[in-house]
Image (cartoon, rainbow over all chains, first blue to last red; front, side, top):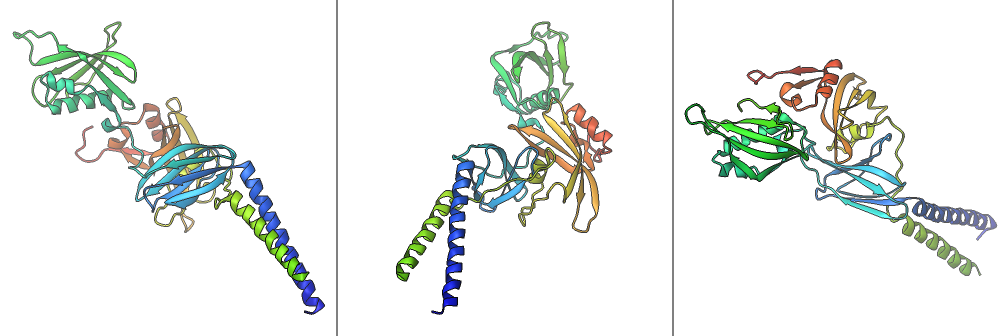
Length: 214
Length: 143
């Protein structure tokens, strides 16, 4: 081996050594100053993205992803075939945060289907049809389109006042809470298809809502 | 002696690379650039799943105005989208706070049907109208 070749080899070897040690140092720095976010999805084609408030979004993988991130809250998104799923994940230094997300239907505008109803079957027991129960659900939605939970106190349902000589149709009175706010309710119905919902303040008995015939 | 040096060299390099692999663990460090509020959420909703590209605020779209509405449970932004040919389109996007994150529920667009917007809070609808968004009724729809 000529002296020139030896010197060249020494230089290359030195560079390789420096790079390797620098990589090791970088690895230690990354592991000590960041946490790991691990994302998995049941849809292997799902595009996985992350973002933060006041920050750009970035694609980090497809189907699954594992990245180092600085400490903070991140919005993780998965998207596939027009469906999306999101979650907020907190990343802590030197810890692994894992989340499993599947793309579901696109984020919904409020609708009757986004309200969680409880106790509605009790109206069937009072003699209303399923069409009328659906009409009552629509009426609750019309009263508060962004409500999350409507709970009918099933023990409170009872027939409303009825004068057979003058009244057309029947009514049922009940207690209900909408997102933890209590109301007195009255459903009036005269056939098998439509219903009308009235809501009252439980303290003052003042009417706060009349759905009209639905 | 040379052989010993080579072996030591290889061991040191291997050890250094081993440390790197163990610490980084196949998970690259990712950092996110600065951007206006909600731009990340808007980008994530616009991701093109066919090719995995993500529109970026500042290059693929600009956020011109953002308003938080209805006790900050809703937000609306006027944005300008730029396509690959350089054409710009102004639009509005509506976001809703769902599980502590803002997610796009409507748009981007410049016209929405009354059927879709009827469930929006009043101040969101007011913002849309003030932004010039057309709210139309479909033929035969109930008023």
